[in-house]
Amino acid sequence: MSKASVVPIPANQLIFSQGELGDKAYIIEKGRVLIYLTKDNEDFPLSILGEGEIFGEMAIIDNQVRSASAKTLDDCSLLVVTKDQLLERVQSADTVVRLLLRVLLKRLRSQNDLIVVQPKKKIFNTQKAHQEDKQAVEKIKLEARIANAFDNKEFVMFYQPILDLKTEKIVAAEALIRWFPPTGEQISPAVFMDVVENSSMIIPFGKWIVEKCFSDLKKIQLSHALCHDFSISINISGKQFTHIDFINDVESLRKRLALEAPSIKLEMTERVMMDGNVALDTLLRFDQLGYKLSIDDFGTGFSSLQYLFRMPLDNIKIDRSFVRDMMKDDKALAIVKSLIYLAQSLRMKVIAEGIEKEEEKHLLKALGVDFAQGFLFSKAIPLEELLKKLIPSS
Ligand code: C2E
Ligand code: CMP
Ligand code: CA
Ligand code: CA
Figure (cartoon, rainbow, N blue to C red):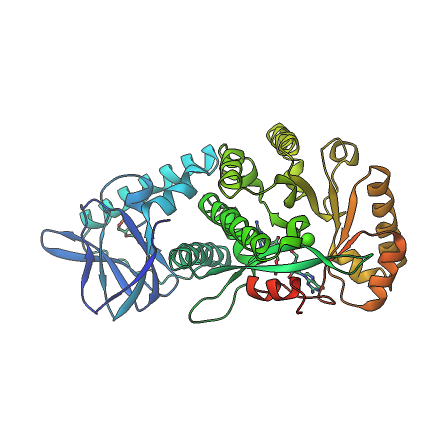
């Protein structure tokens, strides 16, 4: 993954000059930057940009030279945004949006030309970023931070035990990613995986997740002979699933480590499963190869059940929200009951996630749920801790 970096630049230093080729844009993390044009040795300020604003994007988007020069007014910290990172966004945009971008950039360039033709009219516009622009900038910043963190190996796989409700023994674990930045707060995987899944980072990232889970599964099996029935659940995103090399990558890795396909469970949401024919073909192929397939967050996707149940699924996982509400809300309980009934009629095993209380466990067991996962048993833990839980002390 391309490395994102923050560069410190002292005050009054040229960042780039008008007319140069450009291969990066910048987001201002600290300080102010002056954007200006030069004509006949005279400088014409266009704008003073501050924290959270982006500049140097035009040359990348319209593949022309820098439309203006940029220099620091204060000691600045600038987050470098790579050409690839920006172009990926532009190229994935709707064709009409791309057309509008080209038109607007052309107009801005010709407006800049007018400014130097009328040299007396010096323009300053104090910028006030819109809420939406701020969010977009935050997203690019987070993307850059994630790419950097990936290179710095700040991501770790944790495992949340899954128990057989009859024996209350750990029979599986769900792999859940954790990010430990050296400084600053932890960010939830629900937040950063959303950003990852919506960028091309998901391919190298997803591959790393699968590799890590497979090598950890191998360690579990090697450390305890009885753990051969143990399976690992890996969350797979839509983009990853429909990527052309996905099956081959997963298969070659599995073979290299001599893992049995039935000990690997691929967990996907209903949305991924409903995503056209590619998904169905891929599911069928994984099924033929012996992998286990599970629907995550079952009951929240509003997908066609008829379609869903034509798929080669082994498990459904009842969403945490139903488990949380079923003791106090009759409707949630009714949903839990019907999901279990549906799954059983189709000979699928049922996992309930998010179990936090003894009474929830008892009720789910009585209703016929097979497997259980939740804070009542354990949160997601590092591999070393999982190994200790799996191997009974003698
Ligand atoms: P998910 O796949 O639905 O994962 C279950 C989430 O529920 C986890 O949150 C887990 O810690 C949490 N959980 C489990 N039991 C309980 C409980 O009893 N009470 C409560 N309050 N929470 C419980 P986490 O680890 O924060 O992950 C959030 C989401 O991030 C996941 O939801 C999944 O969509 C995504 N994610 C996490 N790791 C990965 C990954 O390796 N790949 C992909 N594609 N997505 C991931
Ligand atoms: P780029 O053309 O790559 O390099 C110069 C940058 O200055 C340009 O991208 C924009 O980010 C910024 N820029 C150009 N014209 C203006 C303007 N009129 N007002 C504010 N910023 C501008
Ligand atoms: Ca999951
Ligand atoms: Ca879930």
